[in-house]
Length: 88
Image 1 (tube, helix red, strand yellow):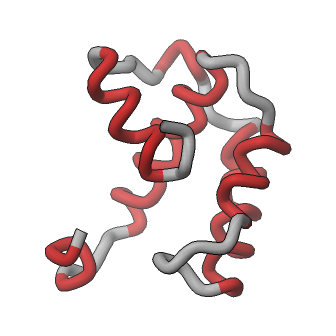
Image 2 (cartoon, helix red, strand yellow):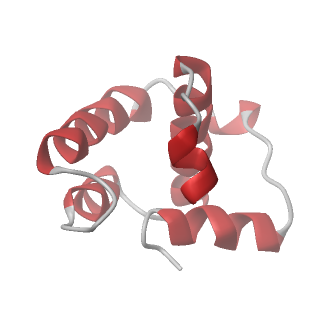
C-alpha cells in the first residue's frame, strides 16, 4: 500500500478499478447503496472529500459498467479487491 501512495495514479487505473469493483459487487448481489455506504465509511485511507468524490464516481459508473464485458479472475482475486473496499 505504501508503494501505491508513492506513485501517481492515472485516470485509466482508477476507472478500471471502479469498473472491476462494480462488476464484482453486482455478481455478489450487492446494491449501489451498499457499495456507496462502504465507500463513504470512515477510514484512515481517504479523507471525507475524496470518499464523497469516489461515491459519486461509483454512482455514475454503476449504470454504465457492462457486467458481461468485465471478466472476473479467480476467487482469490475477488476476495482481494473486496477487502480493499471493505467487503472481505
